[in-house]
Amino acid sequence: QVQLVESGGGLVQAGGSLRLTCAVSGNRFSIDTMAWYRQAPGQQRELVASIGSGDGTNYADAVKGRCTISRDNAENTVYLRMNSLKPEDTANYYCKIVYRSVVYWGQGTQVTVSS
Image 1 (tube, one colour):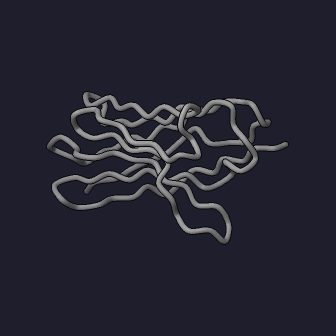
Image 2 (cartoon, helix red, strand yellow):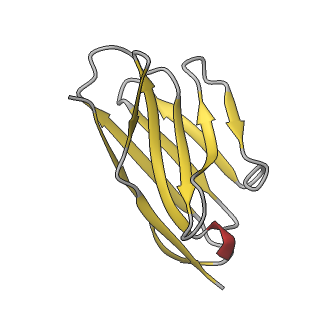
């Protein structure tokens, strides 16, 4: 059974940094796309960043230049480094993977940025 566990969220002041980690277990084969989404209260879930199996990346305009997504295929882990955090980055951050054409989600990790 494929499982995703996120960690690294927390409370940080504006201008600070965090690194989110998503560890995947239960997969026997390599993972296709890995991505981070976020959802603020009353808002729709939105893509933050994604990284393909060939390490191609895609970022939301709101985080370009401030966030870096990376993956460690040997460890089945995807990271999201977030710098220069803003109060509007406050949200629950979810990891998503596509594995053998099936989409899996983590349970989320809360990021709160105080002004």
